[in-house]
Amino acid sequence: MKKQKKNKSLWLQQAEIEVGCLYLTTAGQYRAVLAMKGEFLIYAPSSEGMEPLAPDDKMPFENSPWKKCQLATFAQKEYQAFAWQGTQAIKHKLTAAQLAEAVAQCNAKAAIAALLAE
Image (tube, rainbow, N blue to C red; front, side):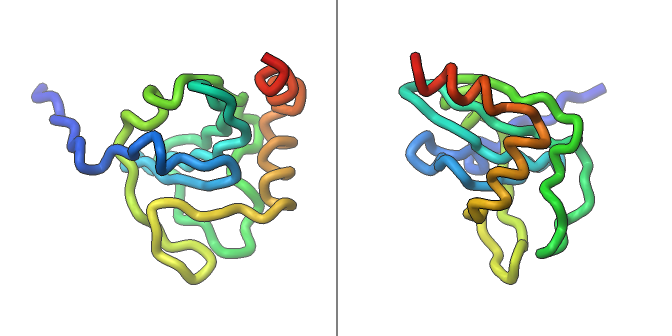
């Protein structure tokens, strides 16, 4: 089986990654960046191959454990622009309520506090 070559033009730059933003990988996995400090971040990953989100959908992280990784690791995936809340973009800013929902869905409050205390 032939391995797919990664398209580096679809990788995010570290400077493009923001807390409170939602991203979509080319594998159809949503990722919400929950916290960032130094070279590390905590994000909520959804399942892969998800249907597009509707503007009023709940955050898609139910039962997804949070992940901690280095910014470089997070950036070196392939991301795509996606339409959400009437806008087409590579990243979408979450409201405070949506961000709180994502944090609650993946049970990340303690992990975020620990990261920010490092």
